[in-house]
Amino acid sequence: MNTILLLFDSLNRHMLPPYGGEGVHAPNFSRLAEHTCTYDNAYIGSMPCMPARRELHTGRYNFLHRSWGPLEPFDDSMPALLRANGIASCLISDHYHYWEEGGATYHTKYSNWENIRGQEGEPWICALHDPTDYPRPNTEITQKPLDRLRQDWINRAQTKSEADFPQAQTVSRGLEFLERNHDTSPWYLQLETFDPHEPFFVPQAYLDMYDVDLKKMNVDWPDYDRAGPERREISEHFQRLNAAMISFCDAQLGRVLDAMDAHNLWDNTMLIVSTDHGFLLGEHDWWGKCRMPFFSEVARIPLFIWDPRAKAAGVRRQSLAQWTDLSATVLDFFDLERPAAMTGRPLTESIATDATARESALFGMFGGYVNVTDGRYVYMRAPVTPDNAPLNEYTLMPTHMKESFTPEELRRAKLVEPLSFSKGCPVLQIPSRAGDWMTFQEYGTLLFDLEQDPAQEHPIRDEAIEQRMIELLREQMLIHDAPAEQYERLGI
Image 1: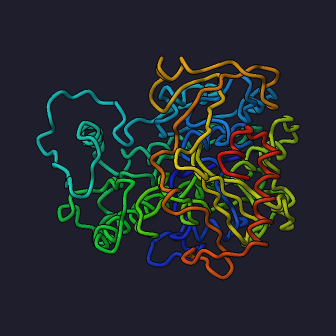
Image 2: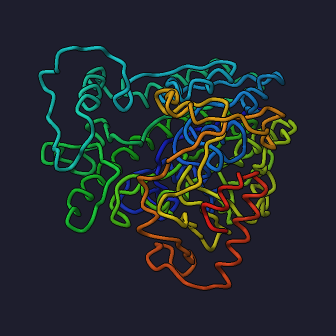
């Protein structure tokens, strides 16, 4: 038995045809839905990229205890557990955050890994002269640092054809893996692309599908910024760019499905296709993610699963599922015991019969809202004071996205008692100001009824429902050993 986990980054559920998306050419996602269970109530866990990857490895929430960072020394890693039990685990990815300081302990947990370079202005090609065709960005639309935009343009010069794009290279390496290994088992292939994450750099053929004129706007990299009615034309430009990116992703998905067909992998291989979160393209008057409340466009994710044991294809699943459940599902598929610290639930019965795997799910980002859903209602609990305090990070790997914590930050650290999941290891408690740039003070606490208001345009006030959601919130925080100050910060 084998498993393929195909991951996209920032893939918008609501733009895909199986989820009602209109105007986006994505026939292979429709083809995928015909082969799999399509989940209607799948949610993120921790935002954004590497917090989500830690959850994928450990099957438990990251955002209650720390921000972006590597795996901890006490973490149980699903790919490492597979490897330790004789199951080859392979990572093939162009997601460059794995190779930064804040992600450097993830790829080593796999039996083998391959990385493809060139995404999002990563420090790849060293060119000390500006490219002669470098287009100066429209600074009225984007405030991205010019050095990062310049590096991204230098990297792009390496793509001479569609096959040169990092996503296409990633899938090609994955197909080579399948060609070499399709007739043996067991193995786990994590095939992961950074697309359709911004910037929306996509082959010209896909831009032509949507009449995208890059010369007119001169920008394909949206900021995480306000996108009110006065910027509607720009939002529509980004929506067309994102649609082009999704069509490119769809073409690559088709290559994977073709390989599944060619090698008869449907008989013995679990296929999971999903993403870590979505991305706002003008909805709720925002572009991006992280800064604003995590509305459904960001928090509800596409999830497709084929389990060759259940053989459930072309069906919808209403049961609540979450990103943290994926690692538990993979371990269960290989008949491996879950670590005690793993709180994600196997979706095995959910896949087969739509049986409920969980009654509620938390999601959020360190220092921001703590959100809970029961599948119908979404409750977004905001910090109760403007200073967003108290708030501490708990870690033995004090590392941000691209660098370690500064000496100034670490001078305030102290060693405290072990967490329930840190295997007896004391951890550093480091005061944090994370979340200060978010907008929870503007929006306050929010409660939505997704059945009556799926677009989340009209928050409701209902004391009985709010109290029930607070109890679900508190229950999940207790299960996940949330620090005491998180309850104080949220006023619950």
